[in-house]
Amino acid sequence: MNSLIIPPVAEVLSQLFHDAERADRPLIELFTDVDAAAREEKITRFLQEEKTDYRGVYGRMREHYLNISATLGHFEAVSKHI
Image (cartoon, rainbow, N blue to C red; front, top):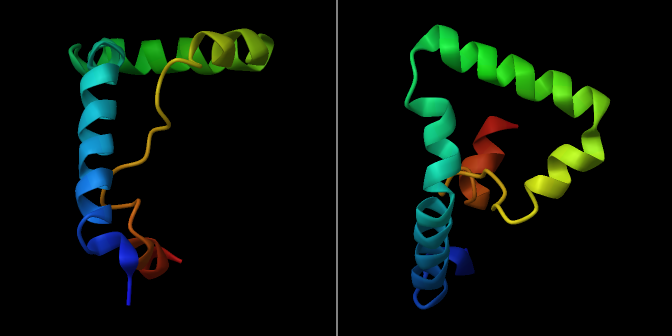
């Protein structure tokens, strides 16, 4: 039995994923509201900055949620990918 899929746990998890998506929407839009070339350049710049200033990059990201999808967050979904 998976306690993550029964109420009230499932309801709380659903609300947490919804809150995280809403809170991080501006950050997500920085990477998704542009064409593919611009997105790739932003990602490349981010990765380069991560290499040179890891603490600074993630220090600025500390207010954001970890990027895990609701589907991947379920244990049964994860076990299928391993």
